[in-house]
Image (cartoon, rainbow, N blue to C red):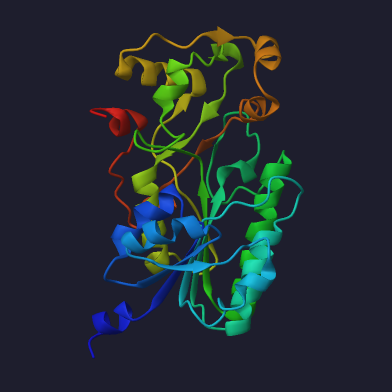
Length: 297
């Protein structure tokens, strides 16, 4: 039996197979037997058509996860934490189910660059310690710690992908031109923050690369080369789409006009390095900047 034949028999479990997971599926077809955990029976037919084996289960109900332990050799965990609290019981339930089988040798977790908190526009890389400023980020820090502990105890090679804003013209809720069309404001230049991005297709490719190339217990920032203040980014989007520039507000004005969630994103500024993505995962970005990702869309 050839090495390729053995590899094709290995099973990859994708947890949280939304937009990014669906972009991963064609990249791993023929290399893995792919099982997708879904809590929605209505998605079963579509997942089968995409080349996956659907498995009904719910991360909020540990009793439905009993079959997971003996299934996967590798796991791609894309599911978000719950919407409140500082811990992630969903990841805890998943890891407990997998630990009972003792089969997983690779585990890739999709986290967020939000764990870094506000860095006042500084350039940082993966050596920067987490400094979460919101419960949303604390939940991700909790999940990361659980994944690392799972790796130490089980011997699985775990990778933490820290991901910024995901965009793509064909991504539901992820086309920045829609925000510009709505006339959603940005901060004026003196109050503005740096923002980071990754095209959904490049993120899917990074997930696949991490399954085979990530170093054990490694953090990798998955972001492109764009280095723009949020308002300048939205103005770029507007210019490429032939739309008027977005309105600008002071921070005080924005606090009156925008939701607390939106303001929380406007309260953190950082420029994130991606050298591990390029050197260790050896990923050549197909959309190295937002301008590249939106041109011709």
